[in-house]
Image (tube, rainbow, N blue to C red):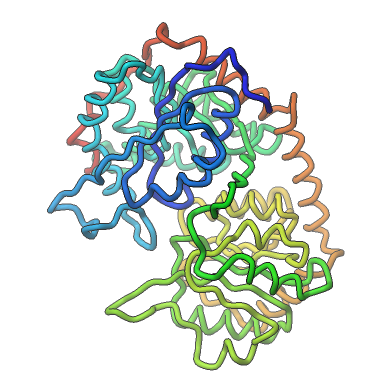
Length: 456
């Protein structure tokens, strides 16, 4: 879409959450806002600055700005010194609490800025303190949910109906519910009914927008998420060597899943037994100076030419979009599910934690566009059964594959000009333009949501 000149000068402050599955779609959303003429300032800590490089390579320095602030440190925090991104740890509430210490620096920055933002767009996890920030600055806060409505609704039901104010996740979901607006990386044709249920039961206003699926940024000369652990051209060349389309399997479990030794051995055995070409992306996690996620000795040699093991950051999009890849064994995080759907690969889902189970239920049971392999963070699947699933997954006549193709067509129609998501994004941008300098916060922030009382 061409830039809408009428919106130029409308300034929005954005605050992503420091986790790969949050910050990358946040950058994709910012890209769409910039294409529609808004000016955006992105709050980032030094070690996460590289996530912005693809975005910065595509847009003028006059329209996108960075506000680099030191990551707040606290001696009582369990976050290890020097760590600024949540990876392989389950410390979300502590990251929320630490980042709330940016409250005063952001207020100071805002009050000295010659053209301060008219609104703040924050990750959903940060709403519990960003609502208060926005209220103190007399602007509105919009929450960006990396969860789809079908996943967020049961979580809001659980925490807001039965949670305690002393519970950190209850506070986070209350922050989401009391934000001025709520944005989803989804499309109404998929789960618009759940979006209406969220509106009717929890937020009681119409400021909800499904604006997805957000297409990943195609950067100029930079790699999404930073440089990979294996050169991208080498991975493409390896995939190019397979002449049968949709014949290979990609295995990847995101940035926060670490398999146990038994799971690693079982998966390796299944891949070898299946006989299918594969790429296996493995997270690097060190424990006592040793790599926890090593495959068994001799495995890589035995599968050489048939399988490629990549340890560390992997260019997942490039792999999923390659013609040779036909299926994807995934933890079923929402970003990965969308990337697989748009890449036309069959999703083999192994939900492990948090939202994965709701995503798998939606895609495998309700829509029938994916195949459930097993479930559970500690589950060890049967190697022979898994090998059979992997082998069959590259068959072109899978009914789940046909249904997934239809869902992809619906998703792409939503983001085309005049589609439901395209219209929702235009509405969101127009509202920001109209609100410049005139609209104040009208939501009420519960008294227990304020700096210093974020985590029970």
